[in-house]
Amino acid sequence: MACFLGTGGRAASGVSRACLNQAFANTFSWGNFTAEFIETEVEIEVEFGYDSNLGRIHITTTAKVPGLREDQFEAFTQTAKKGCLISRLLNVEATMDATLVP
Image (cartoon, rainbow, N blue to C red; front, top):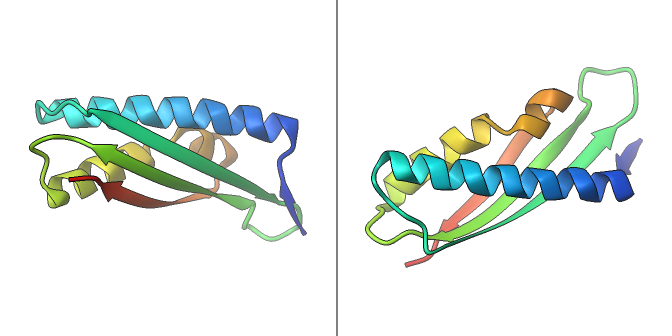
């Protein structure tokens, strides 16, 4: 049985977006890049049951970062995703679609 989190889920999703946007900006700055914009959506699904799969988090982000190559963008966004606090707290898998805007 899957359950999309209600009001608490929206709060967790909002916290996740803010946290991830900051994480993306921080990782970009490691290479001396500054994002013009970062837009992130987070979908949190919690599974109730007895197996080891407790749910998932899916991150969709779009960013415009002048001078950043696609391979650098991929590396920076993957690093930020691995640090996603909500997925670590819930111990769930995090997946991501990340798009670099030219």
